[in-house]
Image 1: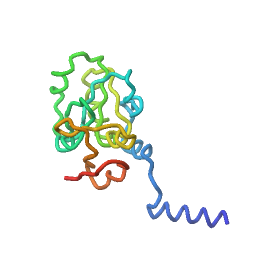
Image 2: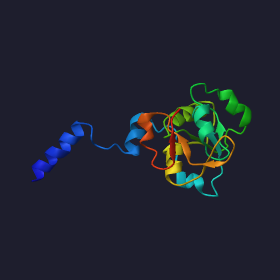
Image 3: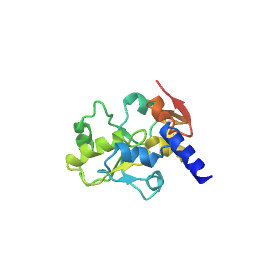
Image 4: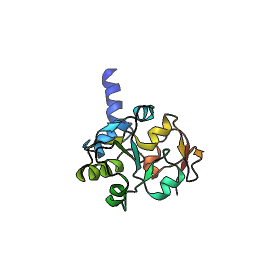
Amino acid sequence: MKKGLLFICVLFSALGFSQESLDDLLKRHNTNDVPYISVEELAMPKTEAILLDAREPKEYEVSHIKEAISVGYDFFDLKTVTDKIKDKNQPIVVYCSLGIRSETIGEKLKAAGYTNVKNLYGGIFEWKNNDFEVYNSKNIPTDSIHTFSEEWSKWLKKGVKVAN
C-alpha cells in the first residue's frame, strides 16, 4: 500500500501536478538579499515605512497599497527615489505582485546606500489575500488587482483579477 501511494505521489510530481508553495516560488526566484516583511507586520499601526510599488503604472492604477509611491520596474529610475527619500536610513518597503520584481528594486536601493529596505513577502497579492485594503487610481478602495500574468494570477486568492 505504501509503495503504491509513493508511486502515485512521484507520478503526480513528475507530471507537474505537485503544488508549489509561495515560499518555494520566492526561493526559486529570489536571493533574499533584501529581507522580507510580512503583510501582517506591515499592517501593524506601529510599522512606519515609505511604500514603493515596483509594478508597472498600469498595475498601480488598478490598485495599490494606500500611500504607496509608484516607482515601476521596467523603467525604474533611482533618481525618482533619491529625489523623494533623502534619508537613507528611512524604513522603506518595496512590493510588487508577489515579491520578485520588488527584490530587484530593493537591491538597487541597497546598492545606492539605503540601509533599511524590506521586501513585502507575497506582495500585493498576499496583502489582498489577507483582506487588507487596496486603492485604485482615484484613491477609492477596490477589490480589483492587476494579476501581471496568467501564470502569476493563481497566487491571488481574493479580489477581482484584472489582466490588461
